[in-house]
Length: 291
Image (cartoon, rainbow, N blue to C red; front, side, top):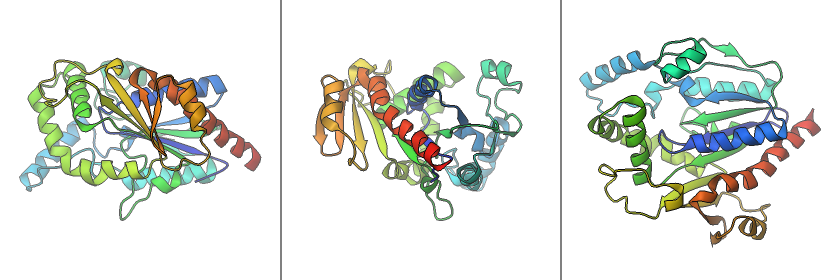
């Protein structure tokens, strides 16, 4: 953790909805005049799309049927930890982009499924903002979580997460339902060992819970909407939060535990703005005092 060069990480599995959190942070940064160094977690995958397919095939031949983007074999965990450490100490670092689509390819000048070249961050940034799979990772060898000043988890209940992934991958990437299901099954051990434990490290978790039947996510015809959901917001350390104020600001919300608020799903972005803006401003104020 660093007073001069704060780091914010948003963590969630693919299909979890971290893009909603990223959008909320982007609105806050723009409104508050904050310049972030942006890091996408995909930048720290070990393989591009073609190489990942080859690595998976080799793993299958060797008897490893659970090789996935969630685990250490397919990621540069030590490099991510080193970036967080370097930025916390100096406010500098390097990153690259993973190109997901033709639209991104046109913007970034690299083919879909490949990486751009590593580039230095701009000379002056106010904080580092990470969004991806491993922003609160702790393993025997790596501790990313201890280097982040504010850690946010985005973690829908598992059936909803699967529904979102199935629909996204079918619509955006042209995958069949069977192919997405195979991916979900292959990733399960790494999900249990490397994704779930991070949500014990995060400072605040936003967990969306559908209020419609999702008992069989593999046949769901559509993704439950925010209007068909509630969101459970869990605060790791509730000290310093004015919960009466928060529940008054977010209509139809209530406290389910001493450290948890339940809100209507369609109030998620508003809740993120109300809760996160003071926390971000506190980091910037601490940065200014330390400079």
